[in-house]
Length: 87
Image (cartoon, rainbow, N blue to C red; front, side, top):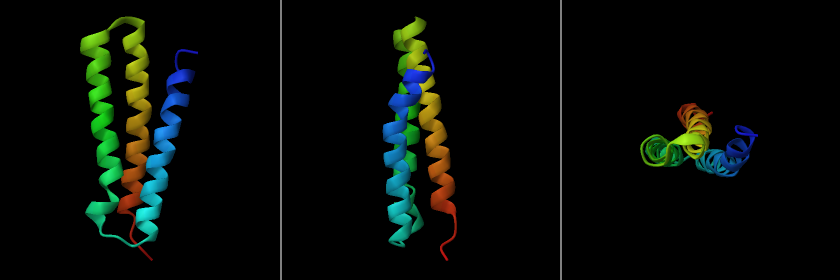
């Protein structure tokens, strides 16, 4: 339960980030534009990690930390999708 809820909460923005990256790649936009969703997700993940570790602490902070981990995983997948060469 402790990891399931942050995963489900992180699933919605993660899928939106992957969808945006896929659409930007399909429109054949330049690399910096395709990487914008991944960069914004990584920044949001760092902010959530800071909030969970420094500000909240305890079990509530752990939920923020798990959410940050799942979002950084989606950001990494988005980076890989954006960097893949166009055919």
